Length: 87
Image 1: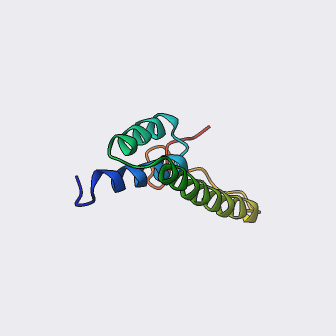
Image 2: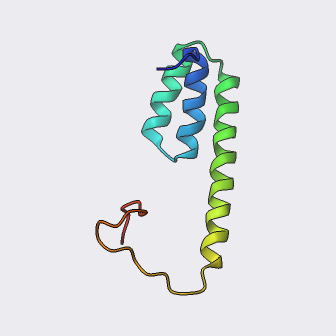
């Protein structure tokens, strides 16, 4: 996996799960972190870091979306660059 110890890896996973808005990931990461010796205060700090990352990313996306003042062509089926979440 990694040279990080499981406690640190678990705390990173907690923050990443929050940033990714993934509830099942957060539940699994919280279990891993707590089972690996992370304290409640540490997990709460990891959650706050994840929330900060998520808020910054969302703010940047909102700013980018607002800057689009021309029609943007849809990628053709199978074109690279999309995430696959076409409406």
